[in-house]
Image (cartoon, rainbow, N blue to C red):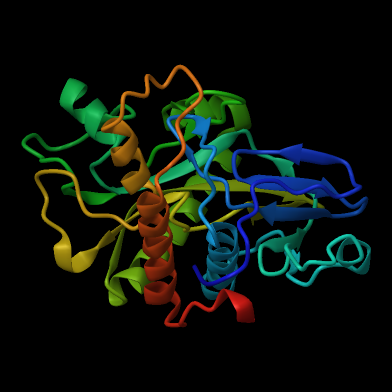
Amino acid sequence: MEGMRAILETHLPFPKRQGKVRDVYDLGDRLLIVSTDRISAFDWILPTPIPDKGRLLTQLSLFWFEQLGEANHLLDQALPDEVRRCDPEGDLEGRSMVVRKAEVIPFECVVRGYLEGSGWRDYLATGRVCDLPLPSGLTQCARLPEPLFTPATKAASGHDENVGLETMVEALGADLALELKKRSLEVYRKGSELAAARGILIADTKLEFGWSDGKLLLIDEVLTPDSSRFWPADLYRPGGPQASFDKQFVREYLMTTSWDRNSPPPPLPAEVVEKTREKYIEAYQRLTGRKWNAASI
């Protein structure tokens, strides 16, 4: 496999918090976000990394921060000297971002352009998505009449919970809630238009925002295969599940195993790892128009 060795975890001498994929270090006046090669499914971190995944996620987010023109938390992609001294092997190169500290808004800003996932399950049960009415007779993965803003609470563990805009208004106030809706829909619109021109449908995505020095900034990752459903436009057929560039391939493999989802997950076979990596690379190459070469990042 080309590229550098897979990174499951990082160890730097700075205060650290660890998410499912990212290791976040406090550098004092700013943060260092390191995207590892961990992959999660069904709320479990899998024991097998996907080589290059962290670099692919980071480079895609950097691409989108540049393309979208949206105020965001990025300060630099170059490693600070105090970090570089702790990384003699260069493991952090290409998978790290130095960002502004921000007070994270405790909602996932979800935008759905197509009817899949929890939105499809809601629709089957109620004919609505997050209390938003939809026309009858829609099929799985159908394109929605217009993109929907369907926020979710950010869960410390387990699944995020879909909520209505009213819940966000009650928690944050109408002005901020409506601003988040407006900006989320605009990010989705811009991203979807660019992706569609390059053969990818962005079915849905989740975004995060935070406050920094009085400014509302787009934070974390943006429009990646981990935070979005990416479908190849030429294979799109509403009425059932779609081929995808995201980690749905891993979920589908795990569903064929005897794993009960209540105990530590099994390792991934080499062919599943390689196929998943290929999907992330293809999404990156299609969207950016750049050939993936991890060694040159």
